[in-house]
Amino acid sequence: MATATTTQEIEMTTTFTANEIAFLRMVINYTDRDNQRCDNCSNAGMAEAITLMGGKHNGAGLLGSLTAKGIGEMHCDGYDVFEIYEDRIDTVYDALEQEASA
Image 1 (cartoon, rainbow, N blue to C red):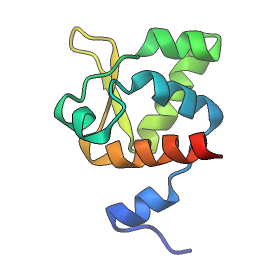
Image 2 (image 1 turned 45 degrees about the vertical axis):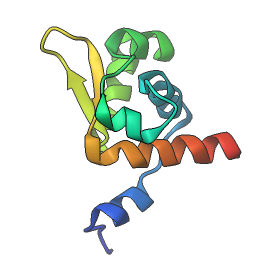
Image 3 (image 1 turned 30 degrees about the horizontal axis):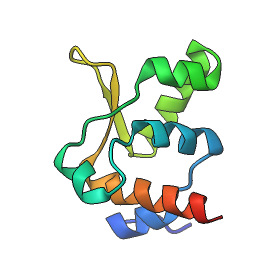
Image 4 (image 1 turned 180 degrees about the vertical axis):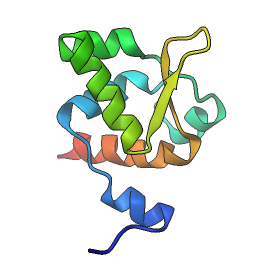
């Protein structure tokens, strides 16, 4: 089985569940990629994941899944927000745009 080795190949193979898409929509602060890159803060964290998923364990599972996919991680030094890695912002926007056009 071949494995993705470049960022572009990884981005092409990343798929998201409906719940991950819903959460990523909450996380994004801006309607465009460039502004998100300049100020990669987040609008959502554990509390929003718990609400979306209906419980603490399911919310943690959602965040764990996005982290395992290399999308981002919780930023926990005084802030309860999920931070998208800068090099994955295009991946997220591509997925949101594809979902919106479906």
